[in-house]
Image 1 (cartoon, rainbow, N blue to C red):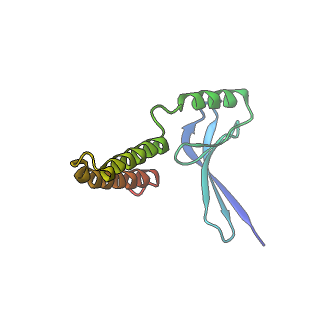
Image 2 (image 1 turned 90 degrees about the vertical axis):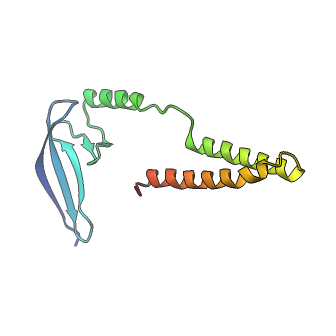
Length: 132
């Protein structure tokens, strides 16, 4: 039989939507690791421990705050995938130039650029996956 036990502890925070008390919720289900999140006692909004929204509450102020948060998180700059495609395209173009016989000095720069691209990609993946 699966049994779920929920414990509530004061987190020391107040909800920025409705002003209610935010509690630290810990759900322990039989045979599963504990799930921990923050939940507002008044409006029901839930946040991960990192602060990311898990569930929006049922008040108008909750939905309004989420819309404001979504607008503020607009990404700027070039998409990392597009940047990688541009770099790969450039390296392939320069490699084709070397094969055709032009730009002799590029023969020595292509391996260096390729190695830099590989290390940069590994570094970016490590940051995304929180390896370091």
